[in-house]
Image (cartoon, rainbow, N blue to C red; front, side):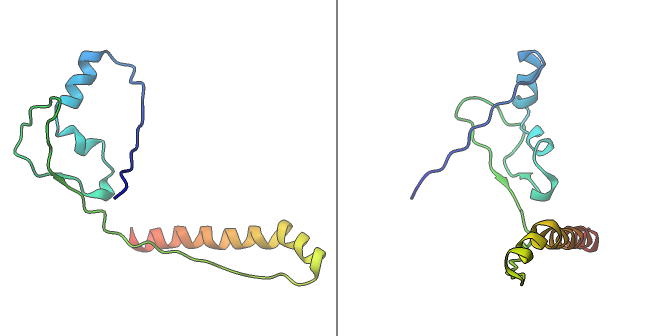
Length: 108
């Protein structure tokens, strides 16, 4: 099995003691995790944050990915390709942007 890694850095313009105190409180993990993941710490708290500490948590991303794939042709050769670049592709993008907004509104 292949292991994948993600690293990210972020400069927090606060002193080290303040930033460490924030991360030392495992409950703050919920504050910095998107609501859509329904993050829940399952470990007994408080958790002593130190090297090697283990935190058991549950994520419930749920959700359904809606994917559209549209194949289309525009007649009239080079003239049709020009029309596609100037009008058709933009109109199609607007239609799907509208759909995205309407779907978000329909499902909250």
